[in-house]
Image (cartoon, rainbow, N blue to C red; front, side):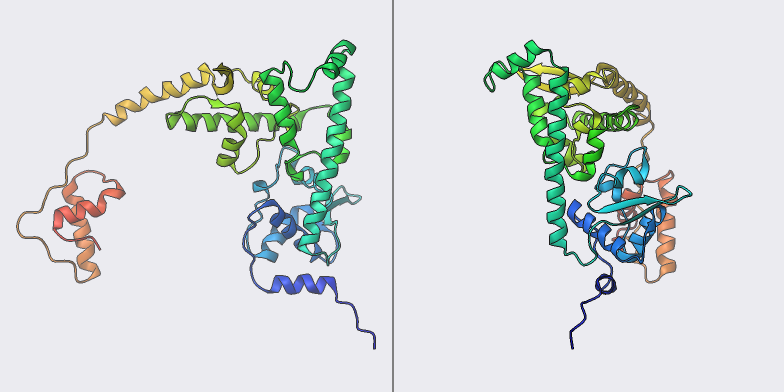
Length: 347
């Protein structure tokens, strides 16, 4: 008899029955998890049920925002950017459904290879679209000069940074870029890119504020991407805001950040207004810090108490410590105050 081929849905169900999976550690793990969840469904899944289905199937929360940008367009707009993993459809009532784009019995390595192929194709198409846009906007004299100029000759810091960002763009994850289809369609309202631009600049402000608290100076633009990713765990995705030059991007937010040049190195720092607000808050906190200091913990007269032998004894001891302190006590100070007052360790 000819052996029957294994049922791919049964294989997915068997993998799920092995127990809860660990939360994904990278984008490839997350895309594989999404595929497993959708492949385990008997048909298309309503998009608003995806997160619940993910949690039930894998045993942990679906933290899609950790790996893919979710903007004002919501989950549907995000999943449209990974068409090689998720296919979307709508019914006559306008409800959106999702299903796996890849075969149910695909292996994780095969899915990773399909993801890499999609990204390579996307990078190629985006680069081609950008090149056409630049060629269409540039005056003939400028275009001729750009062609005639040798690589790196007379290159301004801003142009060098733009080239660096363009190269770094190739390393971005597909979930954080426009899909190939979207790259061909010019944005008319700019709502998504403007929203992401505000989110991105606010993230940079937080990075700079943390540097300021740590006593560090302005942030070199060459270190911006690494420091941004270290704090937020997502890339500094400038092209998705409609810009390729960080200097031009920050120029749109003069009330938040500003770019300066020190020793030939371009750096970004908080604008004077933003910095002024941070300093204005500091004096307001000073009176609170200068408030009356809490009383010192008095030592109990006589010989030290014995350690408590029961819960009742322990509760009484804690009560006597707090009563003797005579003011609200910081929780971190409780154990030390207990030992000082009663002469034995607070166990």
